Length: 342
Image 1 (tube, rainbow, N blue to C red):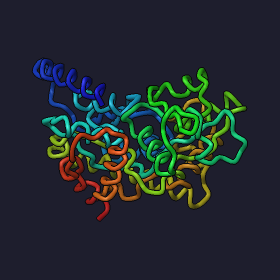
Image 2 (cartoon, rainbow, N blue to C red):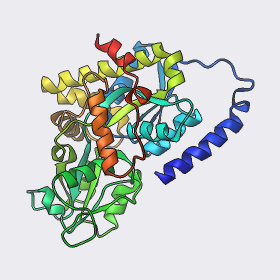
Image 3 (cartoon, rainbow, N blue to C red):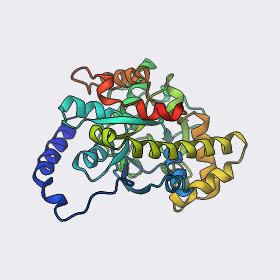
């Protein structure tokens, strides 16, 4: 969390210095043109890419430009600095900014995923994985303070296992940046790591001796508000109509992919995604889509409930990343998603 604090402090200073000069000579901003920053690029966010590729954003009169943050802290920095209008990131970041006292509080206004979307990759699997196989082993779980690492820690500890470097403990490595996990795993002595799709499938394709052995979601017996759409409070107050059109496009894409899954039309789902995943085949995408729908990865209503927010706080508290209470109403805006559900 210290790195997150430093990043926020730097961005706030830069934003203050540049806020006046940034728009000198510029025309009025077109809010139907949305700069969207995603925490990473993954099939875990399939409805977003389907909305882009199927033209659902265009149907709403929106033009979305997508960039990759490579981590929730980087994406949140983009939002606070003004280089992104909306971000897709872990909701833990709004908790951190709330505790830092950000003036224009970032708020969750739509929940995309409701469980962990990472998969455990093993170098030593015998095909019958159990979480106790991690005892005495190192598993690369991502960046400390990020939701993937915190959820994995939660799964390990609620299973009654201890985290540490001892013989009977699980060595959870949280010193690797999100986008560097695959390469770090290849070049380390660790026998396990967690990756999202398509990275897990791509890594196994490059190393046939590796195996995807479990979904982290299967190790956590609860739903989690895992990845959400976040914007500044001022943006949601002033441009609620744009945010609603944005969520409607994503929800229409969710419904399309759900129909494909339920009607066994996975190839159609893959075709809706393939333009967003260079190098992947339709067959690869079908497998990934099926896996994410099997674990019920996507939130049907896109509304983050207070009960699920409390689970997020529990996971964050368990990882030692909270230093106080956070008010649900300050960091979650349910009005827009609720209008879509009506």
